[in-house]
Image: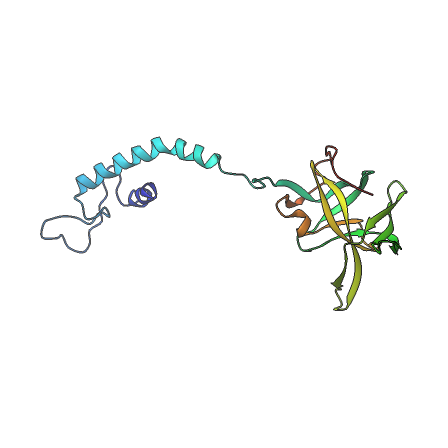
Length: 222
């Protein structure tokens, strides 16, 4: 704060000293120089001393600022708005759109069937994911977490099954809740919303495919 004040004062006091009269000289003959009503000599000395202090402290203040967390700090990594991800235990590589405008995540699935076990009554969802680039298709069978009611762009509502699937983004692997929907009209079969990206990723809309997925062995499933 003091250094900032001196920057302002130096526009009024410099060497050689430039003073600004406030109308008429005061009875004591002092001039208004912007340093708490001090005489020109004292004001000039004050500015010089504080300026030297600010110059010497500048590198230290800069070093302190450099230690602050950069964008994407606090455990969050920087990603582009489109990235490769590995989906499921078989690590199916798919293109994912990182959409901070969407709350939930979704998967492009086909052949969706809800099954129920006779003895336990537990419900499962069977579905297929296809990689259009390689033509590879994998069948998944996951426990039905719930059924979500999703509002469409036209204002109507659609009920979708929700499952949990392991996803590797960069070097982060986590279990993500996905709604299953036919996304064949979209370019990207995987959409990761805010619930999946929170505390994990900072999205730079100027980047795409900034890093390859490379997660260590962990929980997953297909």
